[in-house]
Length: 415
Ligand code: HAM
Image (cartoon, rainbow, N blue to C red; front, side, top):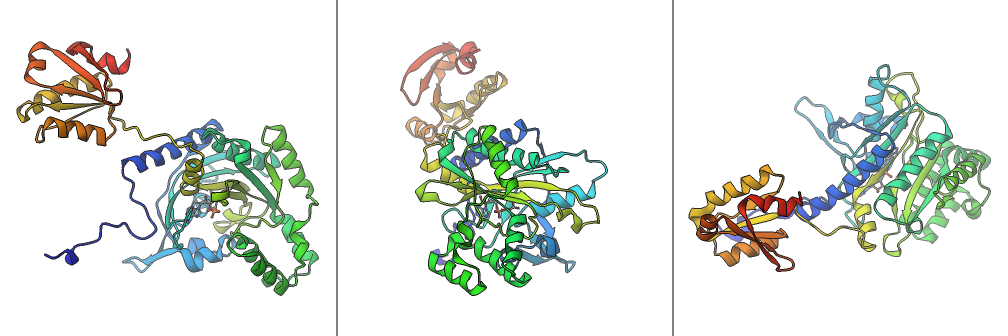
């Protein structure tokens, strides 16, 4: 068979393969998110990747760009139109509406699902990403908005970020609605204005200004510094809670139609990564999709892709370290099972150990350990097995220590 008959080893466009070092980074990112959410008392939930596509088409939930251009959909064998979830918010609203009577409020939920959007792949944007979703249901209080933004800030702090590494931009849909009214915009024009504001960061200033002019909106409308009362109070309360980097951002809109109150985005301030790391806000009416009852809610989503870039440019990503602590090489293939037995003794005492089967030369076996970044090596040979004395070599420093079989595990566990 010629080369051209073979399949490509590339992953599907815009999605990633996670080899162990990349998977380890993803695990680090999601674990840090998880711990931050749990510190605030949030409980983890999960759901399927698949949802009926109509969930995202409903008027109250719509994001036109996502629904018309970015949704992955297919028709199943029963002729139902199915979507790969492009976001988690409609799912969590559905879950809350389904069990409203049993769930206690305020209800604090988090999840780290993978979500899918048919985007043009570029720095910071892919077709599949993992997204921390933090949502607080059952409170109308500004204190709930305050908590959610505090938690967003805490997530970044937990990664080692400092206050000037990011900026929290806050606006309110209510004040944007008022503005639209003052300008006398029709509903159609207001929708266009929201789409224009949402796309502002993706276009040059000239195009944005032209867009405003077309809608008859004065150019200086979004440079005002008359902070609405609720936003001013929120910013003040955040500052008193130690979050000093929140600012009023009158042009911030967020693409989803379900937002009804405060909206916010957390921006990376690094010149290479000027983009939103989190986006969220208050959406008090989304559960009305499912019945007549209103359950107020506020929350945000934060992707792993932007977070990885954020950490990378600041040197905040930990170096890859495999879970395996020691590699057992053998001097001949006949000793593979003996090595496995020694490894088992170590495992029983809490040490992660992998063995080589001796099919390659000792030098090659050691190279394998190094390629996997395993920090320690034990060579298992006839002499070692007979004497019960084994040399542990630290593959980073080259230092070697010879120990009796029964104390090897303690060398690794420090017990
Ligand atoms: P969103 O702004 O569409 O909001 O996404 C939230 C975050 O997910 C973004 O700030 C970004 O970090 C990340 N993200 C979104 N799309 C991509 C992509 N194509 N590639 C990489 N990262 C991406 C929502 O999805 C709302 N449902 C958030 C929410 C939760 N609001 C209330 N609760």
